[in-house]
Length: 203
Length: 244
Image (cartoon, rainbow over all chains, first blue to last red):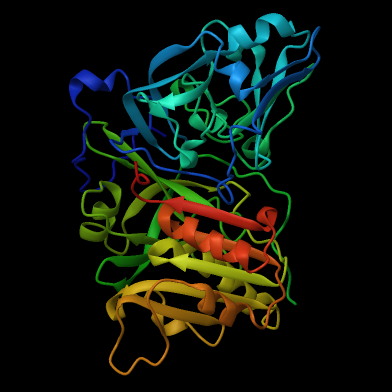
């Protein structure tokens, strides 16, 4: 379409020039951290928390909270982009790289289904989960991850729209095919690259 | 029962140019816009459209708005828009748009917070969170008026009631700040007695809750306590970030 101009629209919330290059198309800068959850907020206690890797793997893995907290911990500075149009620039999370988690499991398939306490699922290619692109995080900006933002632990995949960064993560199942997860079945894009504006099914 | 909306559908997803055919002021901060959509398709009550504004120099802003109308209103959608003081798209709609204006939009999108005819249905809305719930209420009135559906609607004051002239016996209002003169109904936040009152004629079925995050957290807690299954409480949250 391209040529359409909205009568009388000036745009009064333009992103400062120095931040424009960090903002994907159709996004705006949000200084807060909105909460978007489908359904009630799960309450997950760390003493019963487990993180499991199974499916098409050479070696299934499971960590308790204790065991997980002894894994190499990284601080991840990042920008995050929500499909509902807000982006939060210059935030940070802390956790364990998915590379570390997958190393001993040895994935034998090219895709994964992430599942969460509360029943949420999302699908990702192993290529989007490895190569220092994805983490299971337990901290946000130096503080324990709040429950409403997915605490005690959530996935973090900042290069894709944020619905891929599953809150209350419980496990990763390696698959031989790309099985649409919760939002991917309900209208959102199968991959969700914000720089290609892959919001909905047909984008 | 005239008919339900289709269960399986794919939005065209293409940007199209809609024409504003009517504007209704609902409250001092809320207006409803009827928009004629050339590639219109039936939506599921609860779905949204994306709206895109383009300035002369090419600058664009996009936002999502819930559809307030029933899919039986063929060829057009009603978007009810709350004017956010520090917003960009909502002040444009409120301050600039007049009947006959054109805007780009695409939809309808996402099929989680949607009503497909399940019942009984409890709707709980806070402020402009009532908008997608109104699409459900309107569609039920048009298709299955006898189906058990109740709306619990929380507003601040007498001036803040969206769709005031359409709320009937299927709606229970509460005023959190100032009730109108002579109000004999519920005051204060949505609480256990109010949920119990609305649910008295409904066995726990499906619930749709829409509002600010704090509102949704509190309302879902009450619904869980009232016996609703977590998997049968669908939520849509908006507004500022939650407490740190």
